[in-house]
Amino acid sequence: MPVSTIRKITEYHGQQMQQQREIATLPSTTLGCLQQIAEIDGCMLPIVTISLDGDDKRKGKKLHWQEARLALVHEEGSVTPKFDATFGGSVNDAGQSLLNCAVAAGFGTQTRVHGVGDGAFWIADQTHAKFGSQASYLVDFFHACDYLAAASKTCALVAPQIWMETQKKLLKNNEYAVVIENLIVHLEAEDIENDKAPVRACHRYLSNRTGQLDYKGAIEKGLPIGSGEIESAHRYVIQQRLKLPGAWWKAANIEPMLALRVVRANGDWEDYWRNLPIAAAA
Image (cartoon, rainbow, N blue to C red):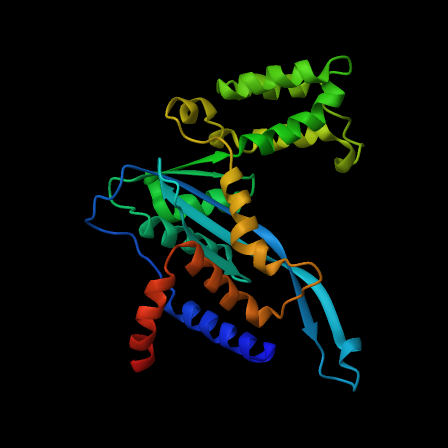
């Protein structure tokens, strides 16, 4: 079978999977599971656009990178998350994908959602917008530690590692106010550029997210304080297929391929083939 035929068949089924994607709403009566873990993050994909002007199409190629967002949700204790992905849409679309995952994973009126992610404000905003008072959101502990590590070289010239470990213990005990105070005495002068002021960057990062630093509460409940699960999922759900060495994608083909990868990762492969004749008849 020619490669072009295989490509057309794959793209066709990716488009069908995209069309079959269900947009979930909050259940009104279903109790659901007690606790879910929710994470969402973006990764950059290689995109090519081709200009139709001129005879030499190679000269009309433009390469750039564009973000795809992957969401996952699973019940606490489960090792089989539900995934959804978006490309080129709004943050509200990404938030909807998180809700899609939650409903597929058994979200209900009694479910508590523990969101974890990097410091991007839109993730926290969408977590609360989609789940309201049923959700809490925690800044990934290791992202916070990256800022502390950069600041430690200024705050503790002699023993930065010891200083760093002290701040980490304080954060895990919800003593972030002490950490912020420890940074204040080492803040760079205002005339120093931001990219050369790691203490200022760390101070701003933590000060702007004090409502998202309940590490002690998460640890006591046995909930994760890091978002490594979604970072790992990017590699085997999206990047394994869409970031092959030397491969660039047309933007129009990204969403169908994401839909295909999500269906496969969710274990919905057989369901898709069963539903295909029904969708075709409709």
